[in-house]
Length: 506
Ligand code: SAH
Image (cartoon, rainbow, N blue to C red; front, side, top):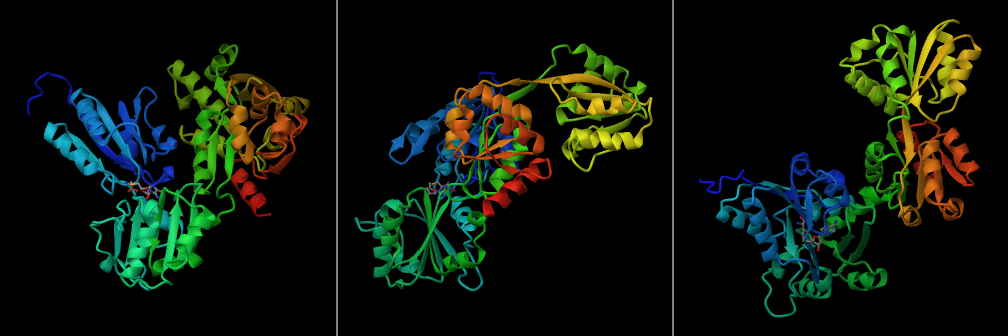
């Protein structure tokens, strides 16, 4: 193999993105995405997956929605071959699996012929996943011993069809059609002609695994009328056979309380992932709209100095993950590490802050029962005596209740601004909010950042469910004129998820 031009060899990964839920991308696919320098993707790829590519990666959209091809298949194939020859690390991302009605075979063949190295990363095909998310198992001992995945792209009533309808007309051998919505009447007619009973169950799953999933169950006799009545459209999977009846018993994804809800997430981008993942899992659609971002404080010297002499304190208190990050950044700049703490005791305001410390090898001595400053103060007073020295490593803008309570009780409390929150300017925030059903605030500053962007915030939010992570944030939101419908009673993302789910059921 001669790389005659002397260039670094390129490589192409043909990656299946899965059917829509970003959690269904494989680990191998995620690794390929994280290291690529060019991404070639089409319309079935979820934005959450596209965003896993590095920020400086070139992203090329090649379309391919029925009727609106941006590039032809030949052009796409030529493009990835050329990018590979140019020495690029290319991810060619396809919805579902790369080889299930996705022309991955042709692309791989062209790469092989051109001598461009490639790897195939299979994906979870919508043919199986969309039924699964509808509560339809593709095989079940009570119903079938085989299934066929077929294309419904050819109109069987117009001349030649390569499908063997005599074989497919069997309710005990499931047929799963992709791309069948345009020809559904012809397919149903053909199955009937071949003897399929009119009461055979049919399931149609539109946008399976996504918060926009819609499911229609009918029979061969009723399905055409039902499609017309409900208006269900492509992209959809059509499942024909007795397995469809299982949905009555094992429907799950679209039965969750938050299913289909669009939830605005205003917390800083670097903290939004956890929450977004939790929302996807609940069948909800996160709309990411960070209203604040975390940056250095106005004067970074005190935070650095305090980190340098942390051993002079009896306790150090961290009131957020950002404070922990800032502390270790400061230590790093000083060329030091976690040993700087010596035997200083360490308090975290809540489990997430404690987890950030645990990741640095630090086991905290105190997490209060309620994750607010008042509770930190109470617990610290119980564990210290007057004269004890306490370092509070926190945001530039924060409530004074913790240091004040400590000082009133004779403790020495030093407050250090370790980081500052600044407002993010988002010209699309009002429009994103309009799309949302639920608007979440996970700190008072996210409320302030929201109002900063949307002057008529309270009017805009009047028809939305406003959810706050705890009573302090709720109060800030109410002071801004918002009607707060949901307040978590554990002040974490988990607590907020539980409160949202409970409210949705009520
Ligand atoms: N390679 C893909 C299929 C591409 S063909 C896969 O393995 O899933 C495009 C067809 O796939 C659509 O017309 C539709 O029938 C089906 N499809 C893809 N994603 C879907 C989804 N989330 N829900 C329902 N059908 C889907």
